[in-house]
Amino acid sequence: MSGISLRAKRIVKNRAFLALCLLSTSATILILALLIASIMAQGSHFLFNSDALGAVFAHGELSQLTKIIRWDFLTNFASRFPEKAGIYAAVIGSMWVCAICALLALPLGIGTAIYLEEFAPKNRWTALIDFNIRNLAGVPSIVYGILGLTAFTRMFGLFGSDKNSALSFGPDNAWWHIQFPFGQGLLAGGLTLMLVVLPIVIISSREALRAVPSSLRQASLAIGATQWQTASKITLPAAIPSILTGAILAMSRAMGEAAPLLVLGIPVFIANTPDNLNDNFTVLPFQIFNWAGRPQESFHQLAASAIVVLLIVLICFNGVAVYLRQKLRKPLA
Amino acid sequence: MTEQASKFHPKSNSVLYKATSTMPDTQPNLAKPAPASAPITTTSLPGSEHITLRVKDFNAWYGAFQALHNITLNIPSQRVTSLIGPSGCGKSTFLRWINRMNDLVANARAQGVMQLDKDDVLDRNFDVVELRRRVGMVFQKPNPFPKSIYENIAFGPRLHKHFHRSDLDALVEQSLRAAAIWDEVKDRLHNSALGLSGGQQQRLCIARAIAVGPEVLLMDEPCSALDPRSTASVEALIRELRQTFTIVVVTHNMQQAARVSDLTAFFFEGKLIEAGPTDGMFTNPKNKQTEDYVTGRFG
Image (cartoon, rainbow over all chains, first blue to last red; front, side, top):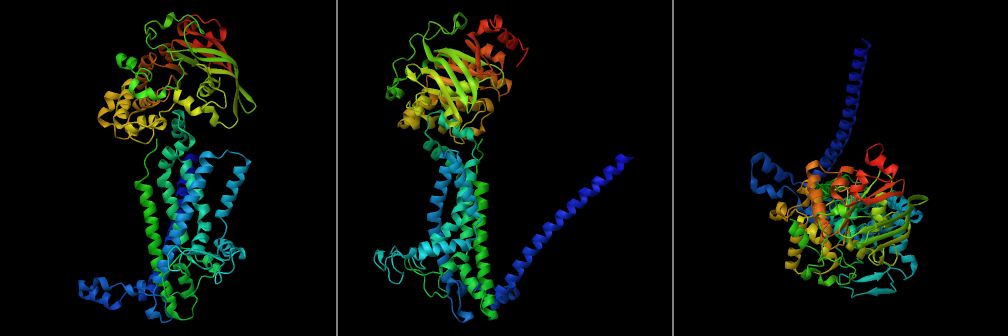
């Protein structure tokens, strides 16, 4: 008798909990859908050509299909006239900065992870390093901006100012022209973003390496491989898919950062693409920040359009990460 | 199979292992392999025959805990020596000191004499990479690399010296033949080793260990993760390999020790209680504790 009522109670509890979980999940999805819908609604004006949209969907004129998207928005530089404004400089700047950031952060981060996971003795010193890296991953990115400002933009004033540089390499028109300090140039931006993502790359790479069964390391060592041979030929290849997944997610974080670059003082208006590593640049999130801060409604719409582009880029990044996780990851044992 | 196994040896294989002439001259005399039919006639341990591994007053610790106390044991060439004893008795610790895998354990240390031929295994200056080439190891759970069957075997030899493709192919075939798995895998050498069954994987791991031309093979409960049928195949292989290698097997399974080994050493609470010919150990143990253990009264 009491057994039956207990059972009924359990079933009710189970259902109630399930309902609660469903509710919170749907709330999350609803918020996300609202966000995307509102951004699309605001951003559509500058992203899509309404005449071409009408022609294709109302009259079935497929020849207008490629004109649906306002390509001008992607290929124009910023402008004080919203109808002429575009995100070309920001897209190119984002690509440059992300490439520099990836080239610096991935070797450094993965190298650090290999050292800490495969070579470092487990002692108080490495525990301290570990603790620090975990804390650094949680430091707000704007703090790295301050570090970037002193270390890369001004270089502690060691080489004069960026307008009056005391040290430079390469001809002014070469893409690899470098001058110290880096000022508000690409190198300063890329290095600052490297600081932001480095802890993330290290932590995700370490977790990828740790997921490789130690039986494989032992097998390798037991046939006379050195620690380096084991790390480079067994552990790293087994961990590479996961490491790449983490690296791509870190890069999408770098792609979305505006705050540290804001602190560096990168220019608001850029009417050319960077010529060399010290040239001024802007990035998508900073362009969005900029447009959203203006009083005119049209600029808010521009900001929304740029957000749509940024979201699409980030979704592509995450898509590649998911693909790598699913396709490249092989069973290890 | 017997023929193949006896033919295969790094020393006798002049083409492939000429380069490893740095090995000491104290190799077992392979011209006269030990008579396979007469393991029981091996009188005592230590005996008068060639000793590959000499252990004297050997102590080992993990931090403050002493895992092994004053072990003195001689392991003869081309015999199977099994180490038996209850869990935690130190037999695996002992095994993992022979190829210094315990170097990987931060607080592990050892004292005493452990000599492989004339080399001091415990000498910090002794090249552990060379030691592990000479002393192969097979683990409890089959642990093939997530690579092809061919790559699993070729991995080890390539670490130590550069091979021509055809020599490497021949070495892979010989190793797989010696491990009695060639016929099962010859048509899928470039498929993943993870597609093999547990018993096949374990024999592959043995082939991988053989491929670098060791003198000694250490096996840490090589059959405990296998089904009875795979166990039988691995045990048969161990008996074959005795003709070429000095084998030390840790096992929890006393029937297995009785089936595969020529000599047995009984460990209990970090001490070597008794060692001798397997036959005598199981039928007429000298020590009361050994008797209790082998008859199943404890452990």
